[in-house]
Length: 455
Ligand code: BES
Ligand code: MN
Ligand code: MN
Image 1 (cartoon, rainbow, N blue to C red):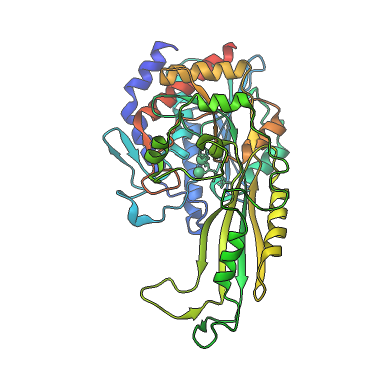
Image 2 (image 1 turned 90 degrees about the vertical axis):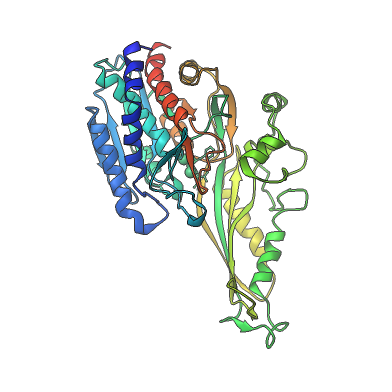
């Protein structure tokens, strides 16, 4: 990497941190409709930043949140990289557990705390700062660049899928670059080659037309909260095996070489405890922790609502009970098929005496991307330049819904170069991003612009 580019990055560390803080101050929570003004603000922030790089930039209006799209003037003799990221963030509750305000970023020691610091504003922003370093030092970028940033990754929106499906030519590229995952650990950079998919469901049970006195009517009618527990208990057995008929039909069996490669990472119970605070690992028998997190499907309650939850005791039979349930999917499970199987099973095992409604909120395809090829070599060299070591190959348990669509529609390799850490508290209170990862991520992307042009 050119010394003047590295020098530029070195000399601008504090400015680049201030700029990121400005981005982090925007409360762009896509799940919260009262934040729609801030979604717009975040999109405009990016547009302005990208225009400062001299790129043609547009805000694309969609049926959902706006997309920010930009590209350099295309020189057909050069390769083209498409960078993707999301400017929306997760809600902040429970707010009382934050040690600082989620949208008032702070630097404590060498750690940035703010909602979105790691997922995904900090990572996305590394790309812009890397490009800035090439532009501001007057160096011609050796690849064509396209940028697409969306604002509804965290809430199951469709805008970016629709746009990709309808604009495959506009987005045509030699590789898609996504930084929305993590290093394997603080010492070990990683390239991710598989993400789980998702089927997100909600069950709503209705019993009596109002909350009833549990003495007067207890024993006479079905209790929706009890019925909901029966349904949930019918989703999995005590060995962690999911009981929905057909659920495992399309699951790709883990091969020995992949199991060996997971095992070589030496992930321990202590690692899991440090990252999560959970007293011990738990889950489907017959699989290691990494296998269960990366390559096995799940069925988990995300939230339940029913009856009296205030102070003291109130004696009622609740009128309603509901639960939000997500299933993480692995290749080649299909979210629509799984949602249908879930709905049919839940309706079948629903006890009598309540009416049931099952809602399919959103889905995402599981995805497996290339593990070798020229662009992977370029990515690997860039990771090494940024983080000082050759990356290991990992899978991730989380989902990035658009990745499957990029793979199928754009016919280009997708590089999942993650700059976060597994313990960055993404989606939790006190989300963080290590300063070094921010700066090293920028060096990684800046290097990638060169390595991708040479492979
Ligand atoms: N960046 C995450 C995905 C992720 C999480 C990758 C952990 C690697 C490790 C992404 O922003 C995310 O949270 N996705 C959602 C998608 C869902 C709403 C369809 C997820 O996984 O819950
Ligand atoms: Mn993300
Ligand atoms: Mn997320």
